[in-house]
Image (cartoon, rainbow, N blue to C red; front, side, top):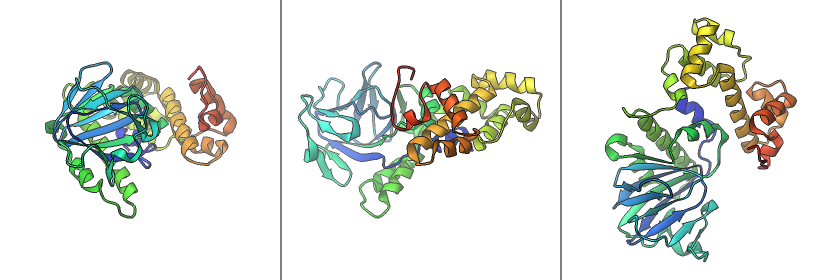
Length: 315
């Protein structure tokens, strides 16, 4: 398991919000859905992404952008075009004055906009679940990732464009997996740029010592790992592993393992009906009490509060 696969293995797209947005100029859509990640690619014409803070980014055919939530942003034909549509959580749309638009914008199977033959067409894929396993990844991304076509060269964009309008059995699963593949492909290209400021955990994956330790931790988080055991597996001293791991990843091995276990547990609590005790044992804790203690210490809430969506000021 590599760095990106490990982070994306848990919160895969599940019934993602996917559509082809087709618009005629002038147009402007305000996005306030608070989604953790949204991918966009122009397949016809062009579009601008205008973050609330930062410079507008122009998208041409083949370019791909990732907007990281929950901050709002605007997608339009021109940065100066005032917003005429607002997208709220759950894909609900309204005018800026709050008047629901409902089915007015529906143009066909997963096609949305103001004109089926509009001058601009974009593929939009939104991860609607705030998957806890992806927190480390989300924290490593800027609010807006932009990859021009020449750097991305992703075969999944035309494939997604071909599949998005189909209405066949199992199509939702096909589209979810295509969105996952597109996300991984774009992030791989983004982190591989010569001037990329990749996070420490991503760079560390290529280190012969720390990379091996990371693989052991991510592939078998339930194992009773110690720094000494990891060091023996990596063929170095305990002190050498601890020093190099902290230097490259930004935290000690056991702190990383704790965060990884709790992220896995958080995702399992939200996406399965397993008991807290079963989740605890699956990710490497002796039982529900041990998991609850760690969860409260690190996240400020209990596993059950996390499962039911409760929040405290400590979060």
